[in-house]
Image (cartoon, rainbow, N blue to C red; front, side, top):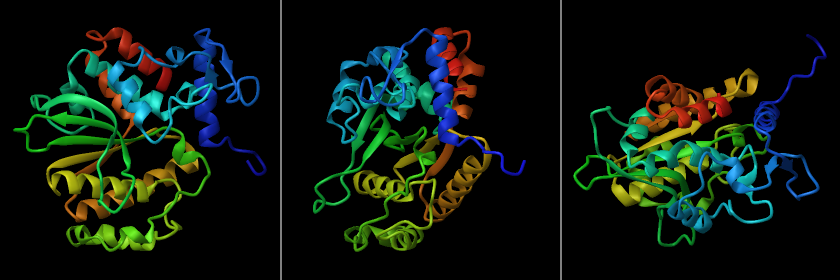
Length: 290
């Protein structure tokens, strides 16, 4: 109706997560403790399906996102992308079955048994001249004999719907020799340098940097990359999906093994297949994130 205010995607996701906390008797605090919107758990463990393992905690501490810094920590936000990733992926590392989540993410066939480890906040250097390497949210490491050495995942929760413009590609990235192997993505990089006026919801520059780092580490055809995002109804979700499809088409035309998947699709796959075998895990992720 004309004049009716439509709820923003980020506000809807946040409201849903706040209600999840209330339904489970979890008291929330503000981003500054007594100040700010009440959207942070008092303890980190309250925001997680299970406590962080020592290896996950170490990886998050060393990552550039500062997820465990501050009081409360960023990861204590009910809308934390880092918490979402840990809640979905760490369980399969704990029970030593990373191949199950690899298949559910669409990386391989169910009979494939290549994946042997799951890591968070993994860095692959693009060039020795650059002081920092981009952090890939989740990496499934495979056996040495596997065709694809890693399955990499860039994870998004509310970030696409935050209303902030994404940064572009700095000019220092545009003269690398590696661009010869991915000419279409080179054109995209040029078009979003130094500012990105082309993509509003998809952080294209970040995905391109991940591709450059993975190519430097493993070569063009020895990795697979998944853009795993939280879908939203309405105009913002529709626009985001359109930008994803546009970027995927260009990257695939360069021969990059990349695909996209929504968290909702992933959770439904896991619920349909493993409700009886992993009931507590499936109940947690489905009641919280569907």
